[in-house]
Amino acid sequence: MDREQKLVDHLAELRKRLIITLLAFVVFLFVSFAFVRDILDFLQRGMPAGMHMTVFGPSEVLRIYMIVAGVLAIGLTIPVLLYQVWKFVAPGLTELERKVTATFIPVISLVFFAGIAFGYFFIFPTIYNFFVALGSESFDMVQGAANYFSFMVNIVLPFGFIFELPIVVLFLTRLGLLTPEFLTKNRKYAYFILTVVGVVLSPPEPVSDIITTLPMILLYEIGVTLSRISYKRRLKRLQESGLA
Image (cartoon, rainbow, N blue to C red):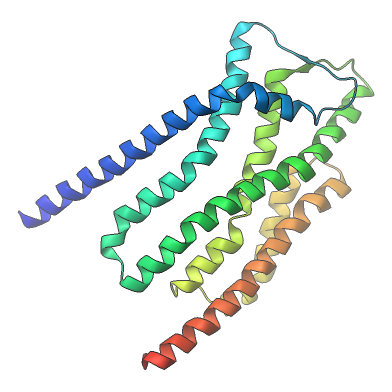
């Protein structure tokens, strides 16, 4: 009976956290809609000179607004989501684990937006201009606005999550779930996976592959370095407390 009651309480708590996160997303979505015109003006500055966007009906305008406002709302909701996850799991964590996980919430959010910025300012222009140049050789290109922003999101958004790699590595090391030895030992497999991801994300052109893959490999190495530093500090703390 106690086990069933605990399960019901956990489900009720999970439902509460999900509702709070969903409400935050809805609020941020409405806020994003209020500034969507300014955001669109900013994003269109990255288009090649002389190219103008076209919309194919009023429904496409709504789709564009939803794409732009939705992505911004997702980014703004991430800190809320992380905090609600932390509140849900915190009762089952030790005091040290609660402190560690709490300190990572703002860091993860900032790094996510840093990845978005990197993807938008460095990766997206390279990939987009490559395809524009390729298409211009055989076609009269008309840029649909919805297609443009969908393509942008598909390229840029993954980098928000890719940039979390060093933070995730550091986080798992702080909790004692990962070691720098493991990362070093499996470096060649990690490089292979990151190279495949880079090739998939970039156009079939060597320079673009390199531009996309090298930052991810650099992020992995940053993660390894952070893991070494964190691991040494963790061992020192354990030795001082007599647990190692």
